[in-house]
Image 1: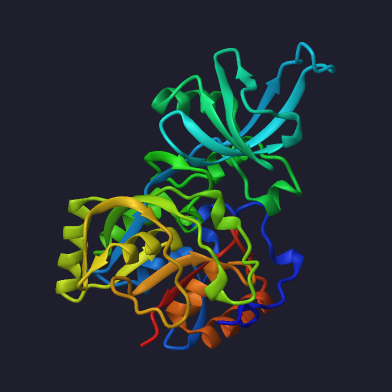
Image 2: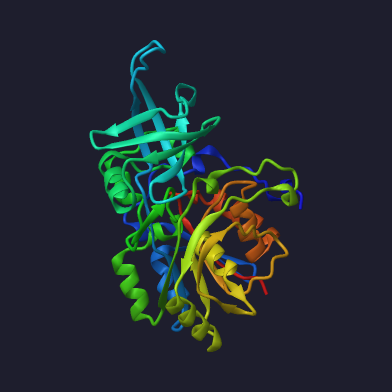
Length: 350
């Protein structure tokens, strides 16, 4: 499809730089059968029904924005150099790929220091993309990055302000469990313990999975046609318990609502013969209009940028013309866009 079909005018003022408080006071646009209505996230219990299943992504955001020092080289001249890095893809327990700035000051085999007890060796380099082998691995590496790192805010926020103490809590869901993401599953940021309790009291079920969000989620579509776009891959895990819960709900006609495009991509990647299959692997699924949804009935998601793969995904779910109208309504009514913005509840077009 022509990528220009997914374009729209988004004023700079619409992009949120901070979340609202409390989390569930964010506005929420409800789109069902072509009808568009205005709500708040706190209205969610009245928009769902007993037997519905909300699928939550339990990934936890790593403090992936790091600053390191490359010591002065013995024969290279100059002094120590400060390098800013953003981890974006885990290759193993102690190896990560990262975007470096200024990357030109790094060479293969350089050892850089993040703190007194955390260093990394540059194993490979491709322009600004470097591969680092850390001196710690697994949980020890996560703990060290927590001590010296900062939340990896999306590029469009990071260009306008630095991360601060507020972001440590704001950029993490209340149900985050499994460390591994370098971006938040932002639809989940709207939930509070009180809202979760109200939903449970209303008979709504929760199913849980993990998809570790990569920096590729922010990559623009540079092709003119969707067929030419190479989708990034992300690692996910769906347990046998979650698969059984969702299959049982679908057998009794319960509705499956993904909280976020990350949860949706994991679910749709794991469909076989109309059933959800437990598995752990990478997915590079690219969902555009014409896709036949196998598991998901609804989607709770924030508002996405023009010509992004995520706007293409919501257009596939609810209909491109419907979503163009919904986004025009959102912009006209001062909805806030993207990671710290407002929410929407979208239902699959019949």
